[in-house]
Amino acid sequence: MIIVHTIDEVRQAVQAARKAGGRIGLVPTMGALHAGHGSLIEQSVAECDFTVVSIFVNPTQFGPTEDLDKYPRTLDADAAYCEQLGSDLIFAPSADEMYPAEQWTWVMTENITEGLCGANRPGHFRGVTTVCTKLFNIVQADIAYFGQKDAQQAAVIRRMVTDLNMPLEICVCPIVREDDGLAMSSRNRYLSADERKRALCLSQALTHCKEQVVAGKTESAALIAEMMAILEQQSAEIDYVSIVDPDTLEPVEQIAGPVLALVAVTIGKTRLIDNLLIGLNDN
Ligand code: PAF
Image (cartoon, rainbow, N blue to C red; front, side, top):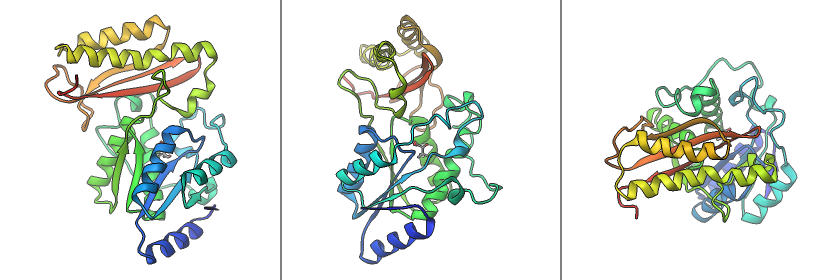
């Protein structure tokens, strides 16, 4: 495995792999890798001949009051993990390499970026879609892997790729959870032991919702109220609790098909998100 820091180097390495007939996989990350990222890398390694993991804490997707400076940067540990999983190349550019001049060109996806996480994080998805477009153009992978944990991000990226005819496939991989149900996240490391216990309320609220739908409840307002009660019992500060269409992310009032239930809360000082796909045939 090699680690490169410049766009020229990653392009050369990918070109060589492609000349050899290889299928190129890209796993875009901001580092601080955990088993959730690991599952994306493993899938790329299994399906592709050459796996690129990008590690870049993208400043344009953080708001002025968000945790850009505090965001964990653990390149050595990340590199060891990527190597262990069989990645071929890490692309770890500096902010100057990715944004050498003031960015005047932005990629924006409308309608599914304003609600949910977008409501409290103005500009966040503009930063994500722009950096992903840059990474797609730099690496020119055949397929890029994203986690279902960031459900809105995955839906936005899928829509962007479709709307702009970007020549790559997007694969969205299932959420990886700890044994007790907590969704893996780079931000879990900020939780104290007590907050870590309380954080189980996210997956518990979502599982409760699924059980209720399976039992025949279809009215989202009632289900949302029940999820909120579970979150509030643990003094989680609620950002949103929502039941939406899995593709358009439009709110669903009466459940008659597959839906996505989502929660976003702050516990202590840490913002956590989780979601669960609820199909008609769940039991
Ligand atoms: O999910 C992330 O880690 C980031 O939003 C991404 C996709 C790497 C873009 O910076």
